[in-house]
Length: 285
Image 1 (tube, rainbow, N blue to C red):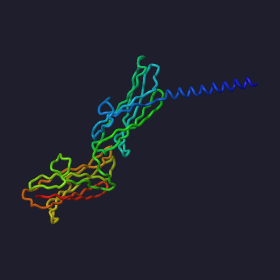
Image 2: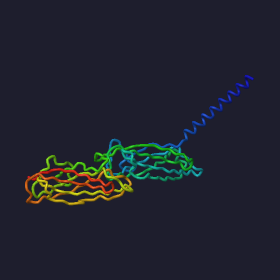
Image 3: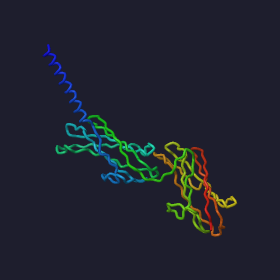
Image 4: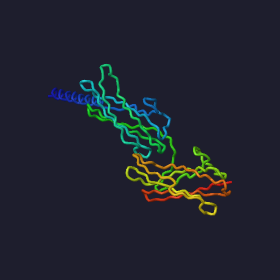
């Protein structure tokens, strides 16, 4: 009886080892994704410390391992790639990647590479953008997924829960990026004004319906000039635009008196039924 028990025990060990080996083999053949790369051009080097800008394209790719081949050595994969901004908002719908090929006997170490071109919104916040990607092996019906990220360098405009006019400043020229510390002009000059509007509400399909009025006040608060609906922004987009950049100019009359003048901007949000006002002064010498 002791011999029989020993045999049963040994058989049990062999069975357990067999199950363990089977589980190990299964784990070794599980579908895997790897080597995620975001580059400035297709199949280029990783961005590393480089940062993309709004409106640019990130060329993303990843490889697949442990995929199954049919008897005719055919490979069929379906992948997805989607990018999310620093707040977790998707910047575009998931990109579906269909991959099919037939391998030769020499392709034993070959790994499929799935590629996606990611077009960043023209207006987007700065920070780390997350890439979520996955692949399904249509032969084995296994799925594997992963995450990666890249950085975007962009203008930061402080967010707001209500309609707001941000950074109302004066400039010497239209293309200037640095505002005048002391905005001083002469009669006959062109005054460039830049600001941002945010905190508006979105309608269906992230629609925006915003506008603004411009008024110029003399030192005694009388109106020198007023233009309603100086500019309007009506648009729809997949990605909710975080702010609206605005630029306009005023041409000062050659007879304009030497005083301090006030520019008044009144923004309107038709979707959220909101109004916001901001003022800034410049001097005519």
